[in-house]
Length: 343
Image (cartoon, rainbow, N blue to C red):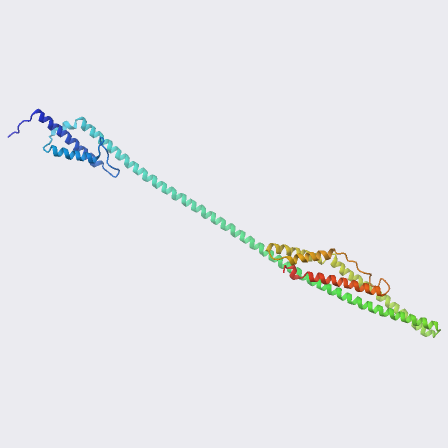
């Protein structure tokens, strides 16, 4: 039994319902295929949820809509279907471009990480190289300082030895001067005794000659006086030679043959003390004392034996010896090897 034919108005309504239903189904299918992590695409100003609701509404309003082959073919040739296909193709192109952009973004991020890692590695290598260079420089400076300290210690040791030798030489010279002074004093006393004995014999000879005593005794007395005179002359020559030797030793000390070395050693020790930051007041005082004594005028009294023996000459010799003794004692007390080493 065939169904009753539809009126033209019913056919038109049915055709419109089929077109709307087909459009909604196609739109829903495209939306479902292109829906991804990047979000829903918007078609004709409506969201996917709105399009889905409209499709459900159309299904409820036209439950008996069905298509046939001829209508499907006519639909595929319609402008709406063509527009939908173009929209689908555009969506596919956009999706592919999004995928390409995602790949490029990941590649850019990876390249940035790699560049940052490379820069960090280069910076670390530069830091290590600079650290090694500074370490080598510090080691070199440390070795130079140690070598300089050893050199200065060797100089200080040598200066101390020189100061000890100098001190020993000064002691020997002072001992020699003292012995020469004592020897000269004994010679002066012996000369004085001989002079007194000679004067006594001369006085006795004058008395004997005034009394016209035995000529033999007078002759013996004259020979004794002559012998005493020879002894006095010989002793006078020895005294003068001893005095020249004593004056030479004193002049040797005064002109700086010994004290110049004291001055140089003390000056070197002063610089050493200044470099080490140790007290150097003793060294400076020793320098001042040496300089004062080297430049102080020394005017000895009359030479022993240059004038006739008298109380004045004896006191002059005593004063001269006393002057030298005081001067040598003060110089010796003002400087010592310990003072030359800076305490």
